[in-house]
Image (cartoon, rainbow, N blue to C red; front, top):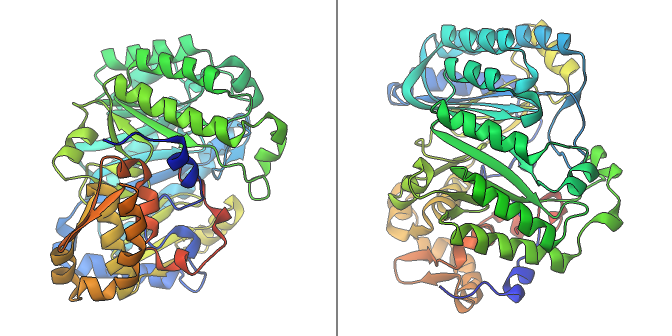
Length: 460
C-alpha cells in the first residue's frame, strides 16, 4: 500500500457526510410526516417478503447527568433521575402505536440503546424497558444487542445486570485518557476505571466491546494523543471508533464552552490521525473503514473480509440491510424506501403521543435516482467496490452513461491511487479505504450541487 502522506490527509481535510444513509438526514423535509410513515409501515406489513426480514430497533435515551462540551447529540442534562419514568411510559406508547401498524411479535435481530446516556436509567428501569420491548417484539437468538455506556455511570454490578438483560455488546465512551483533555471537555474519568470495567465485561462474556475516541479536542497534542493510543492498544477492545472532532459552536451550544485557542491546529490534527492509523494497524487491528477498526476475529472484521458489511444509522453492522425503527425523541428510522425522524424536543415528542399519534415530524420518500445512488454509495462504503453490472441489473440503467460525470471526477482519485476504474467496476484501493467518504461524495447528487458543506464533520 502507498504511504498515507500528510499532503493527502490535508487534501481530504474537508467536510463530508458519514453516509449512515443516503440521502443524508440534512435532506429530510417536514412535508414528510406521520401519515407518510404510517403508509410505509402498512406496506411493510402487507409485503410477505419484507415481513420475513428482521427489524433493527434504535432507542434514544436523551438524559445525561453532566454536559460534555464536545457533544453534538440530542440530550437533556439533568440530575433528576425521576424524569426517566415518564419518558419510558411515552416510549411504551410509541411502541404500542408501531405494533398497531406492524403487528405484534415482529422479529428483531439488532437493538441499540443510544443517547444521551442509556445507563442514566436505573437497573429496574432498564429491566422494564427490555421487558416492554420483548412483549411487543421477538428478539432473535444470535442478534446484536448493544448499549452505549458512560464509564462514570457503570459498576461491575451494573455490567452483570446488562448481561442478564440480554445485551451482548458494549460501547464505552472514552474520547481521550489524558486528564488535561478530559478536564477541558468536562468529562473526567480515570483510565483505571475504564480498564477495570472492560476487564470485568470480558469475564462476563460480552461478545464485543467498543471504545469511542475523538481526536482534535481542546488541549490535545500529537504527543498526548500518542499516550492515549498506547493505552487503548493495551486495553485491547474488540472495536475502536475514532472520530474527528467537528467544532461547530454556532450549531451546538455546548461547544461554545470550548476556547478556540485550545483546539489543536490543522497540522497537529492531521498528525494525530496519521499516528492513530499507524498505532492501531501496528497493534493488529483491521481498518474496517471510515473511522472504524476491529480485531481480526471480531464479527465486524469477519463481515468485511466476507463482503457482508452493512451500514445504518448506528454505523457499520454485520446485520443484513433491514428496516430500522427509531424510538424516542429525535430518533431516526428507515422503513422501505422512506426515512423518518421523530420530534427533537421532549415537549413536542410527548404532545404527539398524547394525541395518539406517532411523533414523526420530518423525513423523506426516496426517489428512483436516490435508490440508485444509495446502492452505489453503500457498496463503496461497505465493500469498497461497485460492480457496474449489479447496479445495471438492479436498477435498469447503463452505468457508464448514467454516471459519466462522476466517473470523470474519479480520474483524479485514480491518479492519487485511491481508486481503480476499469470496464466493469470502481474499486477502492487499500489506500483509498482511509478516504472512502471522499470517494462516496463523488456520487452524492445533493452534495455536488450544494456548497454549504460546513454542516458536516471533516472527512478525516
